Image 1: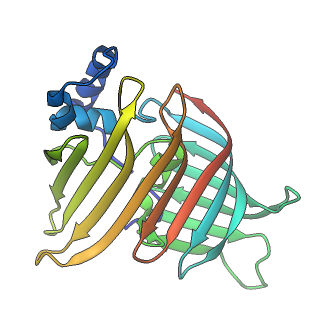
Image 2: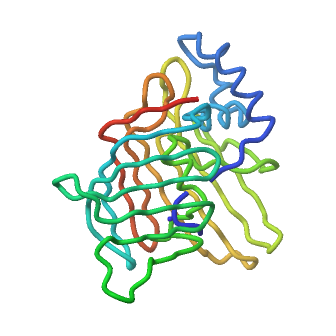
Length: 241
C-alpha cells in the first residue's frame, strides 16, 4: 500500500483543533463559518481514531493488484507508531501466511513456500497505495497531511490540503465530510501526488464507512488507486488508548 499500506503525522495545531471539537459538537447545527473553516475541518477529518494506540481483531480483506488478487480473512494487530502484523487464515482458521508492515516496508511470508523460496519484501507501496499509511488505517485513523500543509476550503464540508517535498513533488489531500454526531466526519479522501512539472505520479481514492461510536474509526474502508484496490471490513475489533 508510495509506501504499501499506510502513516500520517499529527501536528500541534491539529491537537488544538481536536480539543475544540468537544465544545463545537454540542451544537445541533454547524455554522456556515465552521463548514468552511479549514482548521476546523482538518480537526474534524483527522479526529477519527486519533486516540487509538492499539487495535486488534479479525478482518476480511479483498485485494486486486498486479502483485496479488483475492479475498481472505486475517487476524490483525496494529500498534502505534509503526507496527502492523497480520496472519492470513483459511476458512478453517489455519494460518496461511504472515504479513508484517513497518514504516513503508512490507514482508509477506507464506507457510507454503517451495524449497529455496524466501519471504516476499516490498517497499513504498502496494497496489499503488502508500504503505506509510497502513498502520494508521488499521488503527482506525485516516491519512492526514503533515505539519505545515497549506489548507483551504473550496466549499462547505470540503477541505483541500497541499504539501511540497524536498524533491519537488507535491501531495494534495481532498477531504469530503458529512454531518455526524453534531459535528463532521470524513466520508472520502482523494490523495494525489504530482511531479515537478505537474505530471500525475499517483492517485488514491479512499472511502470510509460505519464509524465506531466511541472512536469514530471506520469499521469498513476501501482504497482504489491507478494500480489496484484494497477493501477492508472489520469482523471484530478491540482498541486501547
